[in-house]
Length: 71
Ligand SMILES: [Zn+2]
Image (cartoon, rainbow, N blue to C red):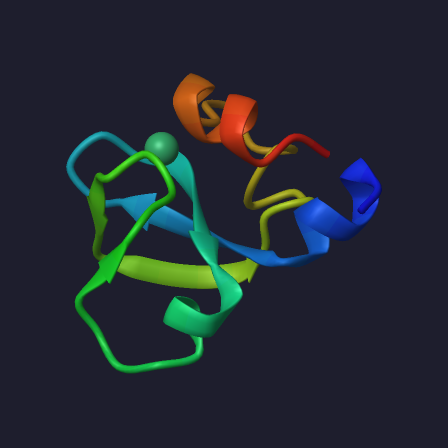
């Protein structure tokens, strides 16, 4: 699997308290809440792709999620 394919397998989640972006595995993101990011942090909102501007392209992507789900 290439890194691009790995990134496509994640949605962008957001922790509303910190505004930090996390990677949420697609199968989980497509299901009902609560959602848990790849790093284990619960996220309140899932919006768009992890590889997009709400994920890795955002101001504060989670370093743990970035390591687990690189673009
Ligand atoms: Zn994270």
